[in-house]
Image (cartoon, rainbow over all chains, first blue to last red; front, side):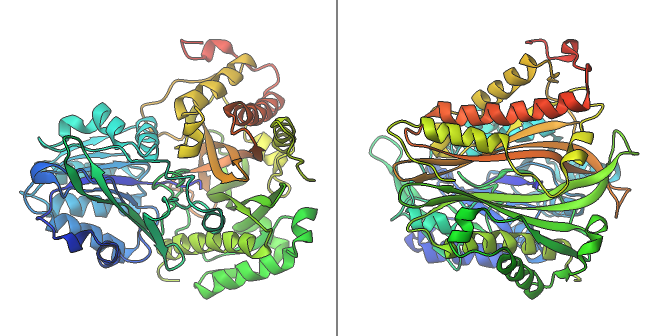
Amino acid sequence: MVRLIVFAVAAIAACTPSDADYSKAAAVAAAKSQFGRTAKISFYEIPSRGVVRDSLALWVSFAGIDTAGERGLVRMLQKSGPGPLKLLVSGPVPAKSYRIIKSALEQNEGRSLSHVQLLFVGPEKYRGELREAAVAAGVRLSFVSFAEALKLESALGAGSPRGLLEGRLEPALAPGVQLVSQAGDSSSSAGRETQARKPAQQAVPQGEADSEESGEVVCRMMPRDIGGGVIAPTRVCFRVKGDAGPAGEGSELSSSPKPASLAGLEGVAVSVEELKPDLLQLGLRRERIQRDVEFKLRSRGVRVYSEVSRYDLRPLFFLRVHPLRMEAGLGYSVGAMLYQRSSLLRSPDRFGSAVTWMESAVGYTSPPSQYDVRDALEEIADSFADDFVAANPAN
Amino acid sequence: MGIRRSPGAAAATVLALILALAAPRAPAETPAEIASLVGLAGVEVAVDKVPASIRKIGLRPDRLRTDVEAALRAREVPVVPESSTLDGSPRLHLRVRAESAEGGLLYSVALLLFQGVSLAGSPVEPKLAVTWEAEAMGFSARSSRFDVQNVVLGLTRSFVDDFQTANPGDANPKNSSPED
């Protein structure tokens, strides 16, 4: 999508953890219990020095957050206790998610939340409510532009909170907080097989990270020398239903903004682009892919229209696969987009179909296997179903 | 269609460019996509976060953005400065994905034009949506930034072609940013 993605970066001062707190299992459990399985969340880069050694950075995609995730976020903010807590939100925040921010503001009164930067897409009245809540809570609230949010996102995506913080947030950090740069190239060092099966997901160095349960949660343990012979507490990096990409290297706008345009949809029609010969040779068939995707969507509660003659009037979930034959294997890019009937704001009389949700990934399979490609498509369909269900819980 | 990985990355580059120029689009959407460019006064350019493997070869978001802006200006497509508000004004997003493979770099590049739209189902609340897009995939055996840059330029040229088709004679360099 055009994904309207929202990130929250929070430096949270928590109580002193035991070593067990840094175990992968504990990190995963914390993520699941606090944010729910469908929230798009990434924990990332934990500053670790002095009294704030347990701070952590958090990105949240409100575009896909569900009720459980919403409650979890508010609960986490409530639990943050005294100490420095910064919440920085970038990327468009759907109007429906304004209440998350508002709750965070209201329920952190007298606590540690001190600064919120927000790119908010929604009615002005909500902005007013947010301003009032911020004033009441003594929180500094500022609305940032789309361009500023993109810069922030880019800095976050670069995996170098140092640059981000030095350039923008450092003044807001409590004394003693020092972020360290992420070590290594986290997006390219994972094994081919793993990466091919995890499009649009943040890759993590092997040995330091594992994915669990279809890659919904990725954890990372990493002792770090922060200078002077001091080994900082382990950084934890994981995300739930990540893409939202917005998380980590390789995550997407994470990259691409994900519009909150799925709310109110009753269902979608599904179509798959004609497959190229290289994919046909692999055994892939367009009809099979379409059937798999339709089944996946239906199993998640998404209504699938079968009347193709009315595609132009109904939202169309369109998938495509592009192959690139290589010496030993096959490269491929998979993408999905949702087309909806729309008109341009600047030219309302001009109607057409616009892409309001989009996701893509690039992968490599060797020896070439149709199942890797199908897995990649399935993950994208899953991601769409997640967003659809989150936007239409009643469905 | 296969890529014969030659000693250099030339073949890969050529293929990537071919793919870029022939980037498939949604079914029967091309006329509508071009139509969505009619009357554009200019575009703002933004780059999504870039994978570490892409940064590693020297391509950072600011560099890619500079490339795209330069290519637009070279063809007299107005590039507007970053706006301070999210008002649905047109923004051209560049998105790069990458994957290590066979000792080189497998990558895909997408160029997406976002504009404010009103959805037919909910005309009251405006959304940002992609009204024009092109995508290409390539492989660089040398993991060369030039290969990726060439694909980016190929996609940008594709956008410019459509822009000029939609706006014949409308290019107005005076609307470009001051650095132009």
